[in-house]
Image (cartoon, rainbow, N blue to C red; front, side, top):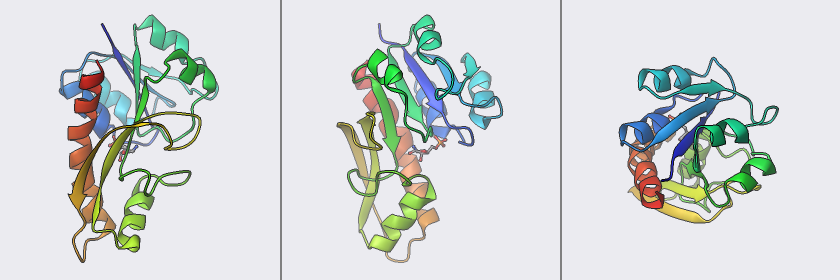
Length: 179
Ligand code: GRF
């Protein structure tokens, strides 16, 4: 059986993490680089074991393997991962990006920067992408996308809210199909 681990960001809300857990996926462990990460408290409320550990300094593979994790989902974690982590879960480290990759991806393209770029570009459509994680930002194979319109006069906040609702739909469905 495949088991999911989730790596969240230090400042992230953890809403994608909560969507994965609430979709009933077998989530064995939620990790964040800092014990202050708001998402860790949310994970604990949802009954999932948590761990504070910075993958750039500490061994992430051993605790994930000890928890039985076979698929690692990044949810708001913004750094590149060490090769040791990618090698331990070949093709099974996933990320969700709040745009239609390959548009509006790459280093520095995260959070509101993405939605601001979408509005500035005049794109009439955006969405979200689940992709495999590699050693290059937002570059791995695309596993799923959902699309939504960008309306004339939309602010980046309008677009962000529309896309986030789609993220909560897409991520659990892609992970479920992988399990
Ligand atoms: C999401 O927009 C996701 O696409 C990106 O980081 C954000 C995390 O949000 N990778 P949350 O912490 O899951 O609410």
